[in-house]
Amino acid sequence: MEMEGRQERGLEIARQKQVEQVKDGWLVKSQSGNGYYHVGEDFDCDCPDYQKNKATCKHAYAVRHYLQAETPMGEVIHKERLTYSQAWKAYDAAQIEEIRLFDELLKDLVAGIEEPAYGFGRPRLSLKEQAFCAVQKVYSQLSCRRAVSLFGNAVAKGQITHKPHYGSTAKFLNCAETTPLLERLISLSAAPLNSIETDFAVDSTGFSTSQFGSYCQEKYRAERRHEFIKAHACVGVKTNIVTSVEVTGENGADIVQFQALVEKTANGGFSVKEVSADKAYSSRMNLETVAELGGTAYIPFKKNATDKMGCSLAWKRLYHYFQLHADEFYEHYHKRSNVESTFAAIKKKFGEKLKSKNPIARKNELLCKILAYNLTVVIQEMKELGITPDFCFLSSRSVSKVN
Image (cartoon, helix red, strand yellow):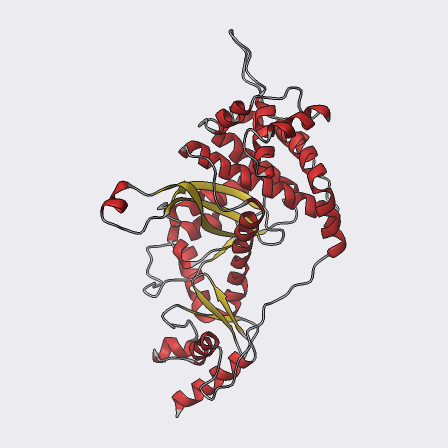
């Protein structure tokens, strides 16, 4: 009878459309509060009922009804897409003026790049202008050859002084020294929003390349697929600005990137109060990293986790908070969905496939995509929040340290 009661309550939750799918399972709204319970892919739940009885709870039944899209009695449960209000006037203005403002902001952003000292031989192309052309080329999604006409327009507008050969842009992207420069530019592009963002989310996503897997896949008739590289990013949850990024191969572990991403965000002038991430990032070191910066990490614990994790005070405090106040915990954790929205926006606007064939060039092309995306976010906030970014001031202090 108790099992039937759970099924009925789960059905009622599904009817009320209180189930939302996330990366590692589903979030089911609590009927007794404002929080959420997390149901995993094996239908395990972090609610007190499941933790005590280890039996299918009403939240798991709600997910099952949600997946089947109908009740055992044949009643159809319609799944509706969530909609959010939009500041349409600001959005329209940002979209209309994006191309013009993008070039202006990009010029200001690269202005602080320090040019290498000239020795002898043929003078090098300006590093500022190479960076400008590379990001503009990726933003336009044109090939190096077709983007040359854009560079000619930039010369006419006074944004660069010389139209480079198309091979110069490819050479710039294929240089290992370009990588730290672009990473620093990404941090600087997010800096105008450091008074707005205090809560962050960390996750990773894959971008496909133009190359296929190794010969063994052909030899053993394994499924042929494109190779991937991963972008690990820390994102502000209010504006979805990317505050720091690390690029690895497709097998790059998520957990080891967390500390560097959060520390880069803090070093970029952001006050870190909250960081949310899925349980793939659950570790004592990651919790301590956020605690040392004066913030709290909302990372769910794995099934076998206990409060005996060494002598970490941050781990013990969050573990007990997770056990006693699950609803409140998931209210904070739910902000993590913003990083998935960010990745979706980058891929939709600039594509999820990388054109470059060389590994270094692929990495730098991906960084250019993220940098271009950040500038579009800044443009949106210029119209919506009325901010006035001053990249010239920031760049003169920081980008010169890269080389």
